[in-house]
Image (cartoon, rainbow over all chains, first blue to last red; front, side, top):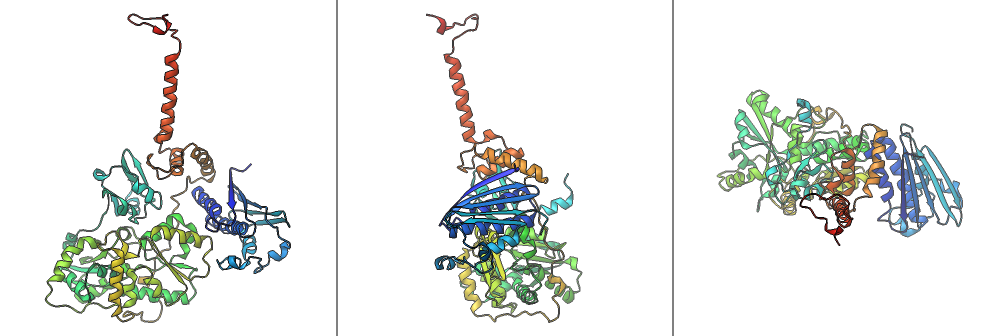
Length: 142
Length: 449
C-alpha cells in the first residue's frame, strides 16, 4: 500500500482536458516537495501516456501511487490495443490520424519518450481489448 | 527579531493598508501563489510567497493593497541625480511625437542626467543574441526581464530555474552605465550619485531592494510613473527648448510592450505571453516539454507587457498603440556592444535558485501524511471555493486546517452543519421527558397531566 493513492478518469476525445490528470499529479508532487527532476520526468511521461489514451483509446483510467522512493503510474484503457508494441516503441512511428496530427500530436514520440523519462516502463496490449502501461519513476535516478 | 538579511529577502513593495481592507475575497482568489489569506477580517500576505506581481493591487476594490515606492524627496540625499525612465513612460502621453519632450521634462524636474533604460535594453538584446548563438544557454531560454515572472519561477517552477536568461535587467545595466558616466564626467564619488528608475510596477521596486542574480542593486530608488506623471506633464507643457537626449531605437523602446524583447532577437522561434495566468500556462507546458520547437520565451506578468503595470496611468493598449507610433520614426538600434565578450556588468553574479516555499513540509514523509489528510478533509467541504473562510479555495482551506492556520468551523458550511446538529440536539432535549427533580419555582409542565 502506497502512502498516497490517486485515481483519475481520463475522458476520451477531449483535447482541452488532456493533461488534467498529469497536471494534478505534478502539482501534488510539487506541494510534497518531491525531487524536481523526478517531478519533471513524471509530468512528461504521464502527460504523453494521457494524451495517448485520448488520441487512440477514447480515454481510460490513471492510477498513481506515490511513495518517497518512487512514483508508480498505471494507465489503463479499453481502446483498440497495439498490434506491434516493439514497432510502436520506435521513434517516429505513429498511427495517429491526420486531424490529430494537425493539432501537433502524433509525431510518434509518445512511447519512446515515456520510456526515456522513466526508470521502468512496461506495456501490455491486446488488440481489441486495450492497453495497460506501467511506469515507475525513482527520484535521484537517471 | 528577524535578522536583517531575512528582512531584505522578504522585502515587498506590495503592502496592505489595513484600515481600508474590508476582508473581502477578491485578492485571495486572484493571487497566483496563493500568498494571501483573510484572517480576523483583514488580508494577510505571506511574505515568502509574494512575488510582487501587483495582481492584488489591480483587483482590490477598496484600494487596500498598494505599492511602496520611492518619494521624489529622496533626490535631496544626493549631489547628482540621474533619472532612468522605463520606455513604458513614453506611452503615457497623448500626442507625443518626440521622446526628447519627456526626457527634457525630467531634467526640468531636477534631474542632472537622464539615461534611457531602452539604451541598456538594446545592449541586453545584443548580448542575448550572442549568448544564444554561442549555444551556451539551456533551451528554451526564458527572459529574466520581468521580476515578477522570475520570482514566480523561483517559487513554483523548480525545474525551469536554469532556463532563465542569466543577464541583468535593462534597468540594472542602465544604472551601472549611467553612474559610471556621471562619475567620469563630474568626478563625484559613486555614493554622491543617485540613480532613480521610473517604474511601471511594484515588482521593480522589490527588485531594487532585494535583487535576484546580484548582491546589491546600483539603483537607489524607484519612482512610480503615476507619481511622476502630474509634475512631469506640467513641466513638459512649459518647455522652452528641447534637449537632444534620446539615444535608443525601435529595439530598445519596444521592450515596453509584450513581444518587444523577443522581436529584438531577430529569430522567429519565440513566444511572448503576457498576463500572469497565461504566463503560468506557458511555464507549465515548458515544464512538461510540450513546447519543444521554440528558442526563446518572453513572459510578462502584466497584460500587454510593462505598459500594463499597476503604476502606469494610461490604459495598456492605448499606451501600446502610442509606443508603436513613436517607434516608427526611430532607427532600429542605437546602442551596440563593443565586440569581444559580454561585459561583466551585464551578467548575473549568481544563478537563480529554487525557493521551496510552496511545499507542505520540509520532510517528505510528513508532507505525504499531510496530503493524505488534506485529500480526505477536502471532501468535507462544499467545493464552492467561496473564500468566506479566508482561504482562496476549499483545497487551500483544507491545507490551512491541516497545517494549523485555520479551524474547520471557519467554513460557513461546516459551521452551519454543526449549528444544525446543536439545534437538533437541543430540540431533542426539549421534547425529552423531564426526569430531573424539581427545584423551587420550577415546574415541569411536561410531566403534568
